Length: 141
Image (cartoon, rainbow, N blue to C red; front, side, top):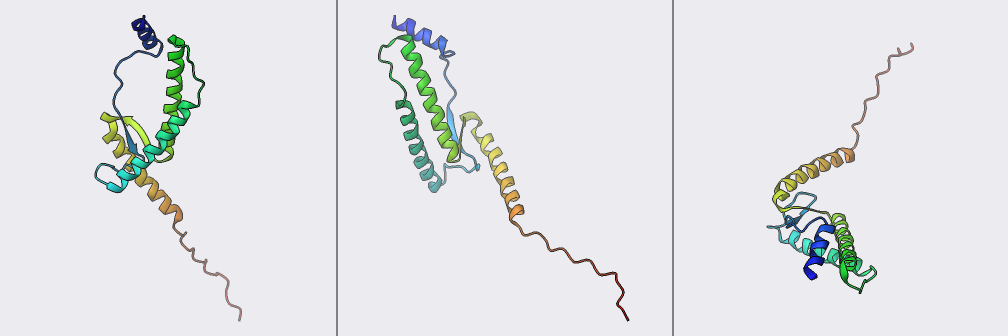
């Protein structure tokens, strides 16, 4: 009976194939691996967002009766909590990507961050002063 319930749940949720491994990347394209400051910040951000995720997961109505409906409700509540965590991490400057695509995404994000930096610098630069046009009137004698 339990195997049947798991099979039904897998069918309901779209299959039980192994999901690709996901990793967080910074939206500025910086690598956290070799930077202790960024590592610490990533740990703090991750812990904070995990707390937000857990609050979201606990805020739903509990279904204590078991069965497929209860499992589906729990899965839906878990998916909603995961969305809260992703939103929290995005607010802190991270995106969740497939591990095998992380380096390419990091490079893309670094280019975008550099372009944004250039655009902001250009917008903040003072406008060049314009020369007053020379007067064409003749002096009166």
